[in-house]
Image (cartoon, rainbow, N blue to C red; front, top):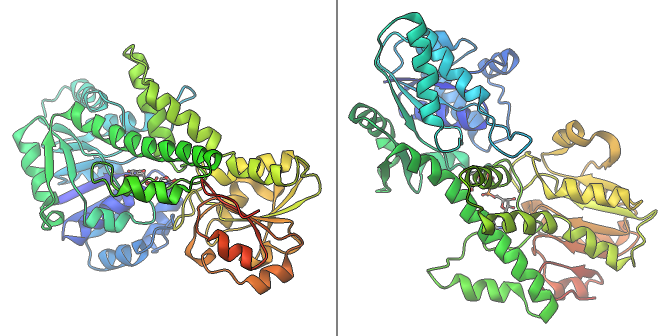
Length: 441
Ligand code: UDX
């Protein structure tokens, strides 16, 4: 079996490498020459635990290749995965120019049967556009060449992507031919030895499944963020409420942790895109519109807490921030709550000193020197009037109270992820604010 994976970003690289792991010959393609040159040297463009070793091993075994030539990758390929980006347009709909660009290029060179699989998250109807773009090129060349399209969305969590790929809860495949089904079944069989299903379905259902899954998860989070705000008003503790509802198997205990708002590349983008698609069909997805609204507000919550503590006067205050990435174990800062909080703090006249275990470079790249960069977590708190925990990296979990007390000017902690206990904070002399629980102030 030989496959080509076009787009060596996060999804493409994980997909290609994990397939290589099962013995398939994989060529990963990207137009970015520097990225490919680096990958050939074993330099991975993203932070994803375990990926370096897996890439190295499969390159050494001669199963994983990198190239900038899509044409070369087509030689003898049985399946081609499109895993290029679908950045959101101004209006929130997914921009398909890269996806369709790949389809077109495949059509320019295809000379044998192949299954072209859309892996990127794309709106319903895209696989048919891929099919048309490819067919148009074949027509231009005046040749008759059979091929199939399929849809196979990924459900990879950043920071846990390898595990998610190797041991998926399920694999969703939208197909419209028996050949495509057989091909994908063969490819994915090694990953479902744990008995989890490969769900074959029609292509629109498969395309919609991805959006519906992310929209549902985003809904759970926003729902809990809303409930957390109510908890604060009525004097309840969201941790109890969360446990109380999470024990009901119909609700479940996952993705009901309130926090600083969801971020990352998938939830915000996919919620926007599904709203947009439905609007186009004349149906307003009202619940999801509220989900978005709740999330935008939630990203401001930590700011409002600290602002209130200082009676609306943050001018000249020094604020330390722990955590910049949208969640732990990634350097991804797309739609990260930290960006909103930093902006609001600076606008209010505070100075901000930040630390993140891996996202510092990414932050310099994104927001430059509008904040100070610390060398470690405690360095960030020097002279700080307050500390804001935005991302729950493990290294922030155990606090060195004597050190914090010595370093900080004020003893205030705002915990955006509920990782500390109010009582412990109090006994160590800290004013503590959290999400959906009583502050100790
Ligand atoms: C998500 C989906 O989980 C994945 O299936 C999809 O393919 C891509 O999008 P990812 O964005 O990597 O993956 O992160 P995930 O771990 O799902 O977290 C998303 C956001 O929700 C984070 O900002 C996280 O902090 C937040 N979150 C998650 C909460 O606020 N509360 C929770 O209980 C869970």
